[in-house]
Image (tube, rainbow, N blue to C red; front, top):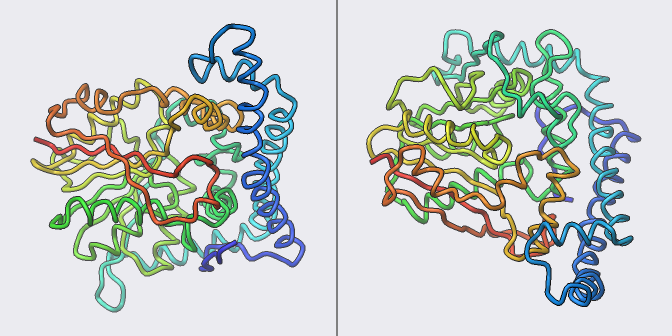
Length: 386
């Protein structure tokens, strides 16, 4: 697995803890690279032919595929092992985090103090952190622990907690088999590459990253546009504390604040560019429209909105396999996103039809590292505020 960049906020592992994480990484790689493709073969060789023999036709959609595939023993075995690997993943990163949590909190506090006054000793502006303990958390965060991460992104287990961020940082590295890069920044890099290709003259002065979590993608935008004021928002306080300390450790100035993307406290027309990275499918059908409407409100005239979303699959079996995450990994809204017309949602939120585009973009990536067998592409919702 590619190297994971160490910084002061990353929990250090003992020999046994690292061996455990290496095992989880190898197990997930085996399940994704060797066993999961077998589910497609099983579907083609016996499940689909049996359905056709019984009904005189192929399954009409991913829902009918689900009815028969979940009865197949090969799929059941892979699914059970995949679920257990996700649980093992969190267990393997929680142990070193819990062991060092007091030290991590202390480091975060010290890194945060460097930002007091807004500037570092060098005269360069430092980032800020603004939390809102009164913020009402949306149900799509509190109803289930997203990705099975215990406590989700929002739970504070102690004062000034950063555990959710530390667990998430290493956890997504294991989850994606290192494919996100040493700083977990592939999604930010991908969307930035899209901007460089499609909008080469874009030079935003104000940028907002919606649902930024630990700021792994936010850092990409701050580095790419060093003269811009970059903000990152999320509803989770512990991930934001971690994001702030992480950015400070990396020497990147970002302003983080605890806010719900459905309704922020920024003034209308505050941003040239509003982005998100695989966030929309973590919301809900009603929240989706409100998030897009808020993005439009926040954009300056001719400002650009870009939302990077994960591929939903092209065939029914691909859609079914992709939606394993929804049924088994607490991606509760994900399966509904499969059939949602994002362009129509953006128009409903107030963007003119002629200013909205749903595009596909493929990064340069070793597809074998990803948890998909189809050609890997990202779906991008782009819209200008006209």
